[in-house]
Image (tube, rainbow over the protein chains, first blue to last red):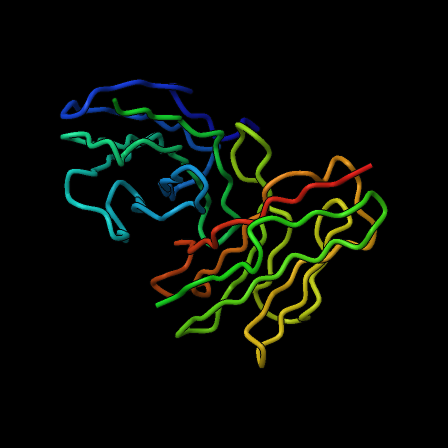
Length: 111
Length: 117
């Protein structure tokens, strides 16, 4: 059984650009969540997808959007990047009400 | 609404000493509570969780935590620290299974544990 994988591992963008981060869920997992972890902080919930539909959102603006695909892989898109978007972005997946497993994260730096 | 407060951003212990990391939570619904560990440049690994039933929960690597509803606490302990325990630890809360907030974790700020030889 493969774990949760994320790509890329590191990314550097400039302010105003757009970025897409990718997550491949663990096999059989139908729910994926994304979290933002700023340096020195705990992760913050961005949103969750279940069966390709957004199923809950944290306190993040609309320029943070996502997609979940039929194979349960997913994307996090961020438009109009700001300096404060620099963070580690974590993806987590689970099946039903079972434990969720986290990927290693993508480190985004916005200059 | 849910929130988590971890008391102490840094905790330092000697190898072999007791580890105690404090976590208090607030939740408007019966909570599920979690402790995660994060090693440098890695994702989060679940140490243990409380859902229902027994309030003393045992996890991996010798860690355990006790859910105390009256104190709204879920402190993490380990009787004897190892060098390999040095990492950052996060307490988290979510709503219970079947509720709308299930799986949407609210994390504390984290506690960095340092273990001295």
